[in-house]
Amino acid sequence: LVVLALFVASQGSLLASRLGGAVNWLEARSLEERARDVRYAIELIVATYGTGAGSGNYVNAVSALHPPSLEASALQAVHNVPLLVAAEVGLAGAALWLWLTTYPLLNGAWRRVKRGPLRPAYAISLAVLATLFTLSQFDKYLWLSSGSKSAFILAGVFSLVSLSDENP
Image 1 (cartoon, rainbow, N blue to C red):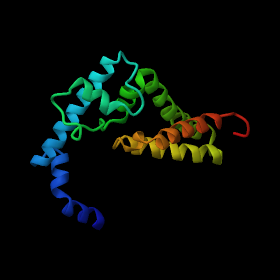
Image 2 (tube, one colour):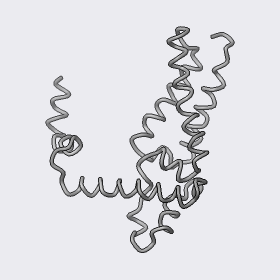
Image 3 (cartoon, rainbow, N blue to C red):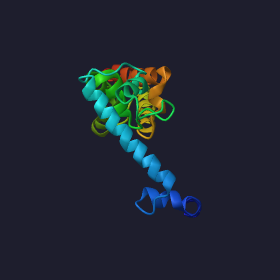
Image 4 (cartoon, rainbow, N blue to C red):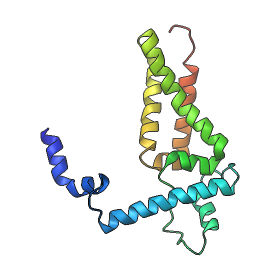
């Protein structure tokens, strides 16, 4: 409780703005930019007919859609990983990403409830996948590097491979 009280005391203005209290100018600008970026991501998905702009091409593609209104340095990738994945690799790629990240987690939870403890290899791959998935929901940086994309894919694939019913 002491740590929580210290955190609230030191971060009170940030917490108040996030929980619907007074919003300072910087927070208001950040919220406006994030809302704009969500609109731009949806526009890009529609403009590419759901096929995506290509991995790593989000900023360039959005700049092409809105050239006079944005400075290149001001535009960032949308801070919503599912939208960013859909805008870059298309709706089919986003569906695959969602399946690779959620199915093993849900299946692991179901197996744990149904059968008891998980095999160590499966539990470790689920822990890695759960960590990557959770962190990616808070910001875009885990999606932007090719190493992170590979980690998502490998964690999902390893989780799926370890689902075999041998030695449950």
